[in-house]
Image 1 (tube, rainbow, N blue to C red):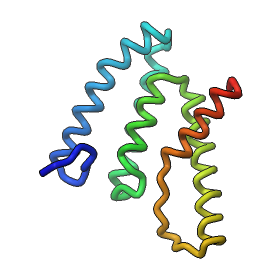
Image 2: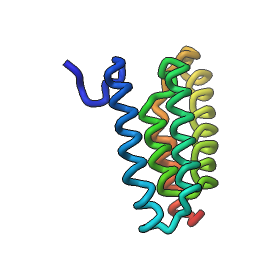
Image 3: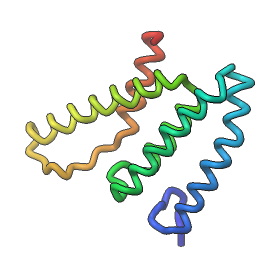
Image 4: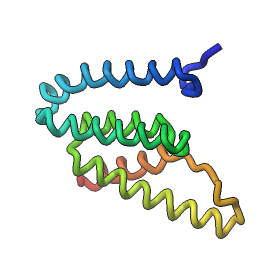
Length: 131
């Protein structure tokens, strides 16, 4: 039995590819029509998400596929500079949090951290500050 979000089988990886293709087919025209983004900017965001998905595959999901999908969606809706800003600031925040947790709470270096909360914090901070 497969569950939604279970990316452990090869069948699911083909489902991921189909989902990415469907998302691109819908979001490129929507981004152009509703947000006024040039197609090239949307493609940059999609490429960033695909790069993260490849990184997740190569690292055996030390970075999750969900992180890649989130950045693909952000890339379709926001300018590439904002998406890169969200990526770098959230990575920095997660790194600082991980170091503090390892040192202060004597955790292992193989500590797994959910990344999406950091992405959310940075994105909401950008919305509030108007960046």
